[in-house]
Length: 115
Image 1 (cartoon, rainbow, N blue to C red):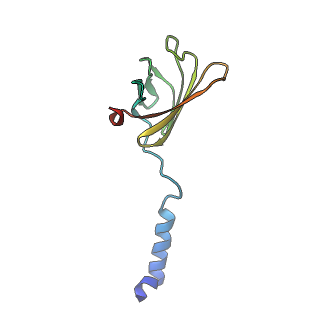
Image 2 (spheres, helix red, strand yellow):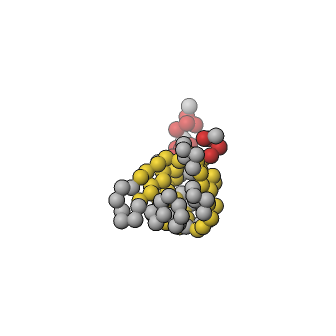
Image 3 (cartoon, rainbow, N blue to C red):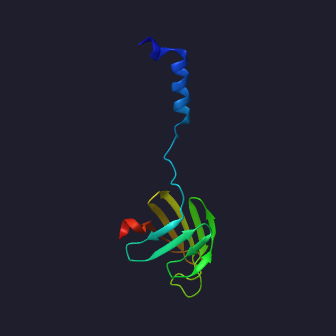
């Protein structure tokens, strides 16, 4: 029992506690194939995206988020599309039409979970 309370053991326990994440761990990255329940899908690979309307383009990428303006010819043309990754399997997609009113927020899943 004495070993459990030794200074070396206490120092190791404190160091281990400090190395543990304080909050929920972020998912590895937003890259991949994403699907919505109505059969729409998109694919992200760094700054490259294939939008739900099938357009290949680039957007503003960061490891756990993505932003682009929906291109002409798509249902939400001109809308700001913002994505944030919640975990390895879930992103929230917010589509804000030009002018800023009536934003729509949807929860998308990795495609291998929805098929």
